[in-house]
Length: 296
Length: 275
Image (cartoon, rainbow over all chains, first blue to last red; front, side, top):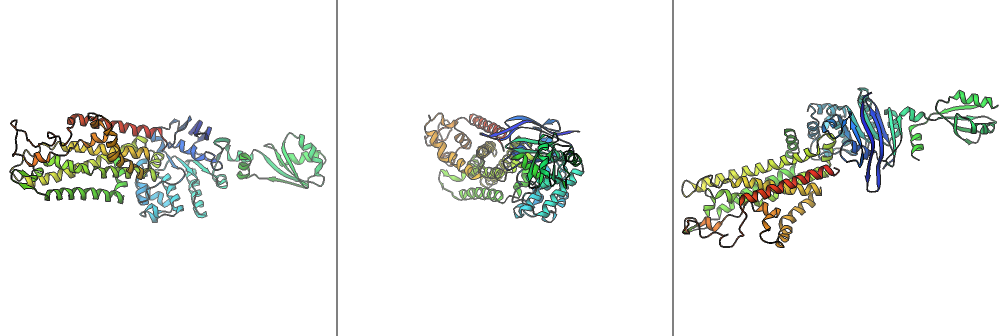
């Protein structure tokens, strides 16, 4: 698989604050790569470095295996970092015309991207007259200009209403289906879980976890088990190799098992120790619970 | 280059403040030239309309136009300051423009404004020269016209100083204040602490000195008082009323040197600082 982005031991400090610390990750072609982290975790700083607007203190990164210094490389990457930046006095069409000229994209592409983002009715309105959600949609339109191979989106649903969020999600999914690579930073975990194939979790500029979303979710198997004599199981569970941890809540036990432990394995274990389970429920972990576990 | 110029054109042609200030420059320059042409002091042996005759009209108009370079410098500060306040420089880099291309784009705007100003001064001087010379009393038509190229360099230099300030400070209002302070009280005060021989080497003095005030008395009394060598006896500098200047070629070299240093400083700052 072609490497689109390779980040190697990247650091960026603001005085004593380590905004990004020793970050290494790889994004391959066709991945929808989520970057998760609480506020101040270094998501935007990391994206600002890889899009060339701020300089790293140390470390390297490359796009398409080539030096990121080359502006031609960045033309293959459509990016929305932080907030939309446009000329308030210019119309939407003129703002996009400037970006199209920078990216050397055909000018008729402007109509295409305005249509995708439902802004074609406002084509000739000055940017300052748009609502917050419309401004965000225009930023997404700018990202799509020139049909880039990679889309870098930093909180693309900021300020959008539920309909707008759904629209942006659909756009991302459609572009991903076309084989495009998407790098998406967000704190809306449900969005990332629905859209992304891969994710990295940052905290205080450090990488806490990175991998396929299903792997991140599935690293631990959790089950709720119940039985009238559930207390008999506590001692054996403490020494069981498949069990990572467990906690008791009245007649129920929440058991966290290592990956690949099935419900059958747990049921057999209980039976072997003389307990017949009256309840055995697999708990599907959400990205949110996994994220909170990681960042705490 | 063409791409960069087209991008700048989209920004400028739709920018109301830019059009207003440029219009103000055009109107003020035209008005001042017109008013000065209406002030005629004509007594035997003394005629101020000589200033509007060839070849004196070229340096005279270049000198008047140099007063309004301040407006052009403010214009370049404003359009560049906007890029920082709208964060569009940052967006341009994200979209694939190199940091040095940001500077090249603004240099193209400076060049375009200098060309506009050059053309305006050339055309108005030509028109007034043709009207006032009228076939008698005028010298060789383009004898002093080379001063307009010096004026062109001066315009560029003023705008480059403005561009440097705004590129370092990154806010429009503060940059305009700093530029005006540097132009009027600050540099003259600093200069006053130095030996008079050193003063022409200061940036604002060097740039301002490219289009010196014409020798009004000498020009107005032309053909009236002549020394034995054929020169005019009413030269302001010879009378000690204005300080003698460095040779023009040296002034041009000093200004070219400043322009190069300032552009290198901007390029260094753009590459080293986050945008």
